Image: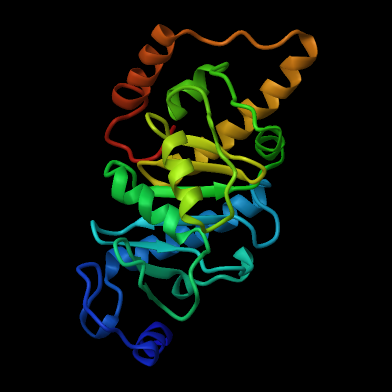
Length: 246
């Protein structure tokens, strides 16, 4: 009843295909909100973010996504705190202001129909490489499988800006992960679980890249190996009827 009260109090200017009558979220939207809330807690517990930084979103339809609110403690969030946003107009529906990176998440969903979830992290090693504005070369099997190759660096732009959106979309071409210069990492997935695993793998790859520089530098995989590994991950890895990574 709390959610019903909140959405009636805020009102709605238009109906969307992911919501029910009177602006009340449907079951798909509610499940996505719970998953986003849980993913935020998982990111915080695993050290992928600190404090209220970072953000998580999930596509709920071709027209809408749900995303974490701006500047709120992940451990105190309830599913009803997660904000629904129109992918085209960026109009929010909920009690709180959505993340400042809402334009970036929406742009990713508009340009990448295969993507169902996005996580933005501030983990230590990924941030270290991002601060150096260096690309993480394709040095680990699991990295090229899940990210699609090297992890490129998006040119620095202010958070929430159109310039950042364009820079990140460019860095993500053909990939599911990118670094944001002097900022953090952005990771995509066909599910929230896959996006989170991508973030963990990118953090590991950043650490290995930094440490390998101490012993002469890592030897990158070649384009042929990268293509084979990526195709294997997308089409043949794991139990294909399951949605999560084994």
